[in-house]
Image 1: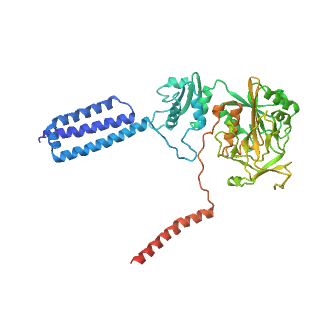
Image 2: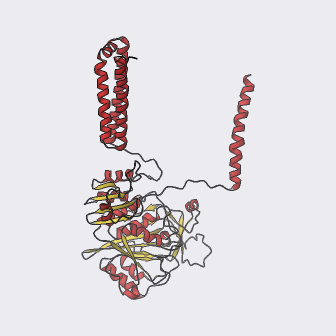
Image 3: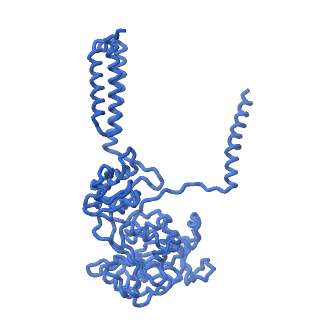
Length: 508
């Protein structure tokens, strides 16, 4: 059986095309030109070249015919279309643009992260120790970090191929993530944006600042994980690279020098004069204090507030606008959507914060412009303050001429120069907004963190934190489930069937 030359050339074309396609696919998947891939590409190219040379006359005759010219035009159009697609793809890669249509912008870097990245002065490297597989859940997030700062780099390291690097960073498990900068490194427990940005802060900050919580008078407990506790506050602050510690002013006699911010979080009993004086001296030396004072209590801190022209009301703020009902809350939980002009409240516009059982706070002398007080948190017009309130009162209706109509101020801030240092004070008439039960409600966490950031003079951290997905699950009762079942199974198909029968009957 003899084989013609034409069949040999045709077979060379098919085999060459197959080898060339296999080489291209393997190279694209492995992202590497191995010897096997190189051999496939060269072999396929040689066989296609043999076919072109051996079939030159036949090809010339074909392209000279009418059908050949039409085929050539079709091929030219296809080539032009492919070239246009390639150009669009090239431009898309070189000038990429993303749109995040999720309600909470889940796939967009937060303002906080962008500020941290824009302030970087040294290189930061992220290493993920794992097998080099096709899918990498961290790669897309790291691409956003690199786009925001050229000082950020990312690398996947196989600890089995590079055990020296794994030993250098004391890596013990697959999937571990390490962030390094200079000689400092940090092992990350997660790969979410908050953890990644917190890791950058930990390896780039030259000194960890301390936030000290005053204890001894029934303040909110950092160790308590129940709804009234502040354990989530401690986690938030540590995530932002602060050291959190309790202090007892009776034992210490003064606010320790290493405290960058002192927090008074909802004391139930009054401070001794010596303790109030210690806080006052701390402020006079350029310290920063956050005082959260609940209604129905007298922490005896008026001597601390008076020199700053700040007073706290002996009242209870009530919100009768009904906004809290959307979240299952009553009038005793004022909702704040109006904020004063301050770095603390930047980015909180049109966002809500909630204050369960709050008292008013404001300037003692409105005409005293030597000590300007900034109103931070204002309730709506449909609110009022019940004056001289105590926990035994049950009647909470507005009394004209006795109670204070809204809008009300629930928090103020002030800063002033004390020698070479900048002293700062924030007073809020509520401590429950930062408790475990309410911290994650809407923008409460942003308000608390921003306040500490401003007091600690970490303005680069003041922003809206990364968001978590909104729970959009629908919870139905048994009766609602049964109604939905019969509605979808019988009612809708029944209506369609009856409509079809009526239309058929009219057209017969």
